[in-house]
Length: 446
Image (cartoon, rainbow, N blue to C red):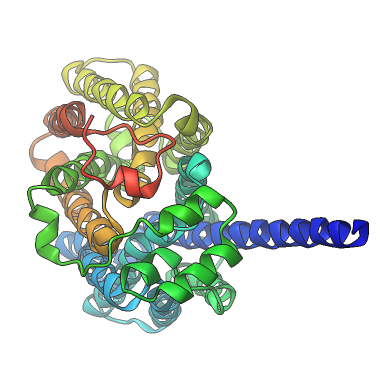
């Protein structure tokens, strides 16, 4: 009897260890994907000068290429979200990284502005797929009490990736003879490693249950999920097909409006300011360089770390609503205080970067929580697509706005966008701390 009991204990411990290792592998491969996303979007800034000289870029082409990946997300997010809801998370999670490898390698061979724009657009499609497949997949495996923290960790990787890309691009372009094609193409190595790591990952038990494959769902839930409560919650999934129209149904229109609008208003000012940090700070008499791109991203990464540590303790709303009002005020002060000393402006920009990153962390958590499994992919994809319309517009329009409207008006426009996001979140942001996915997706409102 004792031998049987001891064998059972050892077996349970080994089983728990296997589940924990799997969970951390899943977190790491998704974190790597988000690092790559940030890297791809951040690497373009430091090489814009030599790239423009080599290709003879006009201001129009410069803006289009800088925003190309963001516009690609507009296509990739809803398309991959729809496909992951219909065909499964596993297939799309691997396929999007394969597309990443191909598109990233194509950067070595571009010789015309339209070619570079097309490649960056294709990379954006892969990034969009990462958002609409990776976050839903992770949310469907992690325990409820850790969901906010583990999903938030992926946003740390995004900011770190953006920061490291800016640093790598700046140093390689300033201190080596490497061409801008090689610098952009450094993302290929990261993508290839992640593609190999993703091969063999299991399908989501929640998705399997939702499409009626209950025996497979039950087996995978017990094999890979740590929490018994989460295993049981899988069996609460509805067996029904999702559709794009469900996003605007009576039950889910609030979730759709909130996630898309909140995300749009969160990223539009950030992408515009962070992508062109050097030129923005230069307008205020500050030397950009590393202090510009890396400094703003480093502060943002620190803010995400703090948010990750707090999100499962203090809840979602307190980290979503107040920081948006603060960002509105900070940008308004920058716009209205025409004669502000340069160091004061720098502090205000750093404060904006900090608080903006706090609530931006929730853009990676909320969509996976407020949509049910049958539309979790397309819901996340739609919100990501809408957000990247804002990010693309901000990145594309900021150089024009700075030149034609002036820095003050540009910052006031950014403040207005932040204010709209704050009001929307004040109205619709739910509190989902500690809830199961069945509970969070049950049409919850605050």
